Structures are given as structure tokens and as C-alpha cells.
Image 1 (cartoon, rainbow, N blue to C red):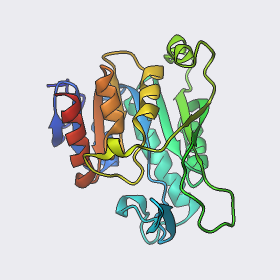
Image 2 (cartoon, rainbow, N blue to C red):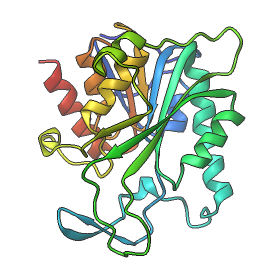
Image 3 (cartoon, rainbow, N blue to C red):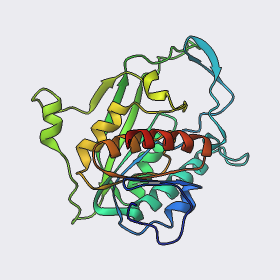
Length: 266
């Protein structure tokens, strides 16, 4: 089994040599991780978009509501509440991250500015602002603004003098045809072939996580995803020889993660 990095017992939904899945509230589970025990964190936190609106998916009008995990409480609808939420989980992630570790956080205009501020407030220094440009975004049904076709991914390290983050510069240059890789990454939305074990409304494509894992970790290191959803981070971490810890509050999505991780380990 994988090394236990928790200071207190947690119910493991999956426990193999390469990965661990934990079903539970990320805030509570993160407090039980050993300080400075993980090498890299990728987080795709709630965007708080579940407001009963509509969007387009597969040519059909569908609700934007993703689930209770994407909503704040009835009394928690303001900017301050969202920002407190972001500062809290980022603070807990910082404690779990090694001195030379880094964190990647994906978001849209709905939450990424709060996240950028929260990172700096909680002792991080932003390394890069990655723009992920989607080649096939859903159309804008309202026709009252430009079509939303990008997401931002912030890459940050601990803002400490002794912090020396890892960046696989040569590998990224090689992947970019021998030229320095820029901070705009272009590609499609998640392929249907990556959703055969079940669907998640904000599932990231595997090529995106492959690049992130290769760019900022080395083989054998530990990758953490505190909102792991359908497990794409884990799939790429394990496939590339890293260890993985995933946390999610939804058993439905953790089942998808479990099936995908078991499949990659076969």
C-alpha cells in the first residue's frame, strides 16, 4: 500500500501502491495531512456557477447547476463569503505542501480573481498565469457578450526565500517543437472517450493534466487534488509514475475516480 501521509485516521475509499482516495469534506481531510508532505497540488475548486441558469451542451439547452458542491449556503452569496472559502482551503493546502512544492489552481472569471488574491494573502507567489484556450467551447446563448472560451490556471509556489520550485524546462521545450513553451495552451474540451467511466460537469482533459504533472513534478513524488472529481489528476499522476491523493465530497464522482484509477493500474 501507499505510504500513509495522514496524521489521523481517515476512511480510505481506495488504497493502492500508487493512489489513495478519501471521501469527505476537503477542509476536514486536509487538516489530517502531515505538514509539508506533498510535492504538488492541482485544484479545480467550485466555481459557484450553480445559479439556476441555462447553457448549451451537445447542441441542447441544459441547466448550469452542477450540484450542491458548487453552491454556497443560502446566507453565503456575497463576494466576501466566496473569498473566505478560497482563503481557507488554500491555507490548508499550503500547510500540506513541501517547501519546494507548487500549486496549480484552475478557474474562470467567476472565481479566479478571488483565488489570485487569496494565494498572495496566504503566502504564495504566483509563477505563471496560464490561459487555457478551448478550441470547441459551447456557444453563447444569450448573445450579450463574447463567447467564453478560456480558463485561467494559476501556478504558484511558497513565497519564501529558501523555496526552489521544480520546472522541467527542457521537457516543455521539447514538447513545443524545440521552442520555449508560452503561457497560452490551446486544445479541445474533454473527449467523450475520457468519460467512459462516468461524466463530471467540469472534467478536465487528460492532456492538460499530463502537461502540468510533467512540468512540475518528478517520478515518485506525491500529487494531491483536494477536489478530485472524476480523477483526471490521479489518472495522469499514476500513469506518469507519481503517487496520488484525491479528496472529494461526492461518492458518485469518487466512484468514477476509483474506476479510472483501477483501470490505469491494470
